[in-house]
Image 1 (cartoon, helix red, strand yellow):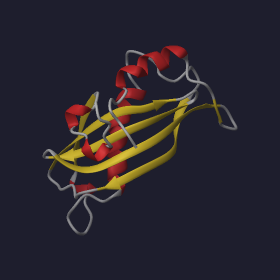
Image 2: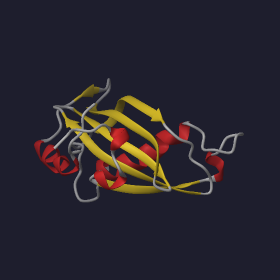
Image 3: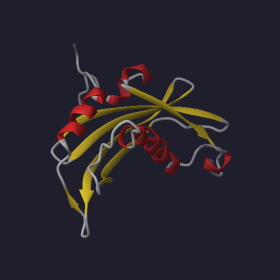
Image 4: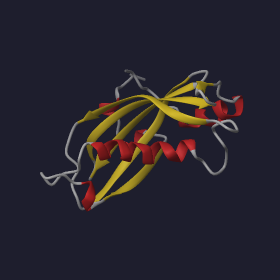
Length: 148
């Protein structure tokens, strides 16, 4: 099958779908959602994977930090309404994950995101390998046919 990039993904192409409510307070003076809230919508999508009630993805005493986020703004998001968030994993590394996400409103693509998350612990903070059971669990959320 041909590989595609995130702008070509539809919501149903993602292994995990979620939604968030657009709040009036998310809007700016132009009446559309302020760009900073796009990152919050992405957080809603990735939290479902990282803070799963069935399994602790992070090792005990560890958490995830964002090392890089690349948000591509494609269309406005408006209030009132909801957004749908598609989330999948592009790559699982030794101590990090690369997530791919798309945000839709009314079936229209509004943004894509690639986020690198690093598994960390301690003071000072240092990266630590992901547990094998976490890597195995995360495989179910891999994006298929993705090409950067």
